[in-house]
Amino acid sequence: MSGRIASLIQHIREAVPFRPIPAAITTVVLVVLLALPVPEGLTPNGWDMLAIFLTTIVAIILKVMPIGVMALMAMTVMTISKVTSPTSKGAVSDALSSFSNPLIWLIVISILISLGLKKTGLGRRLGMLFIAALGKRTIGIGYGLTLCEFLLSPVMPSNTARGGGVMHPIMKSIANAFGSDPAKGTEKKVGTYLALVNYHANPITSAMFITATAPNPLVQSFVTKATGGKIDLSWMDWATAMLVPGLIALLVMPLVIYLVSPPELKHTPDAVTFAKSELKQMGPVTHREGIMLATFGLLLLLWANVPAMIFGSAWTMDATAVALVGLFVLLITGTIDWQDVLGEKSAWDTLIWFGALVMMAEELNKLGVITWFSNLVQGGIASSGMSWGMAATVLVLVFTLTHYIFASTTAHISAMMMALLTVGAALIPAEYVGFYMLMMIAASSLMMTLTHYATGTSPIIFGSGYVSMERWWAVGLLMCLVELAVFAVAGGLWWKVLGYW
Image (cartoon, helix red, strand yellow):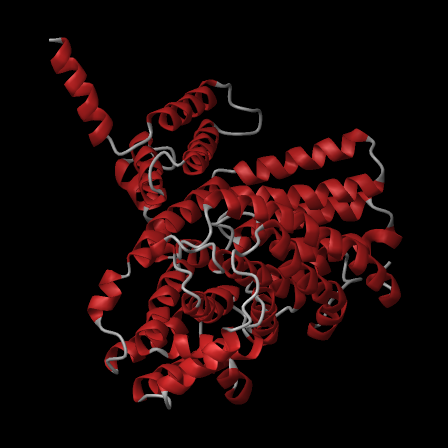
């Protein structure tokens, strides 16, 4: 009998697809949260939804199972508990609601489009050109990627399209050219460093131009309303205010990441010669590469809204619609085929887990959890008697760090920013309100650094496997604090010169 029991236990250990100790910890977290009394100002459903969300995040951090399975678990629990709807049908509809979100599909389609760069060889060619120009040191390549990101940012309103759809395939091609591939266990050679630089350039450039990411016009309108029209930033005003701190942050970022997450291959003295030799062997651009390059150019023109600038607003196209056009062009020209699309596991994995997190963040907002938390912060600061400087610091940090519970910058900004801007405008002396408003503008983009689900760009780069979750979160928090400090110090001095405070 004891032998059969031992055999059963061994079978369970081998067959069960989750890690028992992390699973037990996650279960305890959920039970404890559900057992706690519902905080004043929250509905029972709102508290239950928050408990499910926090438990899911804990499960993802502890790696109980693959992140997609954890996302399905959360959706299943939501559906069974009917926390968002009194009916099972309504609960299922809520759980699946984000899969019609254009942002989710922009991420998936961007990953699929990047297949063309690899299959045609254009990605490798671009990588070799990059290495030939800047390849003597890995950090030089990092600065090259940062420069490209900066040049694209004023004319690409989708930070996901820019960082994930355009820059990331080039970054992967460069990493592969050095033999740095997660599938081979060599991601730390140069790929981890380049992927982190690829990502962390994206939030900084998003803060620098009103046209660099979709929520920025909403941020601009909130600042105008909160200040009664005293601060009404035009495109040029925004760019001028953010240019100096943004450029300093872009200069500092690749170096800081180089120090905290250094590449194994730092010096590449033969890389330039090697790259030129490879380019010679590749010969002239092939027809397939030409189609991919033309498609790439078409995407850039449409993402930058060039037709709308020439022919009027009727020609404006949504970023996801543009991505669909690009994918269709690649398919009908045979540049990639349907089997390539079906076989890209990372795209479909991202669809599940990122879609689930976006959905849960939206449900938290619908159930009043975000409003409850904002009011809690407002009341606490107003009654604390702290100095205006400390109050401003707390408000900026609360706004930034609460992005851990959001999977969309637009949702976060819509839910919390106006309330915190209003509180700041009331508590901070009038002569310093401009400094606070500009810091909140910067924070609305810099908060993207924190997690692998913080914005549309992050799941694309995280999904490529170059950066572990632990490293992503650790470097993300560090870079967020460093960049906030850069904007507070360098930006503060620059804004003083410009007369904002």
